Image 1 (cartoon, helix red, strand yellow):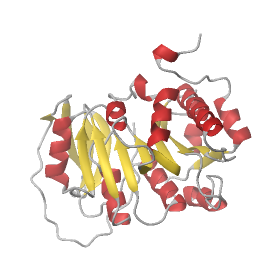
Image 2 (cartoon, one colour; image 1 turned 90 degrees about the horizontal axis):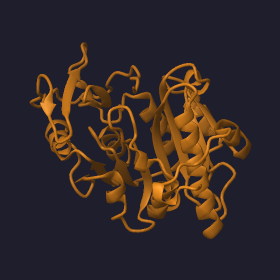
Image 3 (cartoon, one colour; image 1 turned 45 degrees about the vertical axis):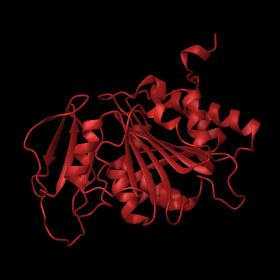
Length: 304
């Protein structure tokens, strides 16, 4: 379950309240419910089938609310300037898309979600950016990703859950290869991995992303020493409790002067978040995190 950070809206915009429902609303795949903050009814937690999915601040779109989204925002701020082309797999309430649109004017984004009705409701409730700033597509994340052109985007964010579990076909080497296909050289793949001790899922996911990076690098361009990272708060990293682990991968072939993920400034920015987070990067440290975990493959190509 994603945890909220405590940050009040900094906007002084007019308190125009959209018509919001009271209680669950049926969607294509279940129900959505908007839970208003007790002290600030402009701050909303979007619950999908009873699970917190997004946080939306109607006055301040840069306030993404959840710790893991704050981590992703910090990574993007460190690695990229100006507008971005971004694909969101698992759009839900489009909190990250709203934030990127506000922080990086001129960005072009695609939000993909399996729930067509949810996307319609999000447009109605949250005054989302319009096309071409934000295009919404209903469908399976992997199927929609396959329709995108090679090297057509700067960032792919995977935040897909069926209740509290990511579907298996989005966890494999073959899926990550598809992500790397649509990323431009040096582009970023950001993953929200919800896990519990002993972090077996996160370790397998890192092993999987590392295997895909090795395959692409051997065919196209050399890998950097710090093109893969694990970020979370220390209590989760030490496998003391359930929480969100953000995985970050940089597509091979970026410009020679592009910084990796192991910069002191990124580590400092992550420590400075409302909930301080720690980053693991570099071949030795990442290998230590992975341990004996094996990469995951599609059933048809699974190794014996």
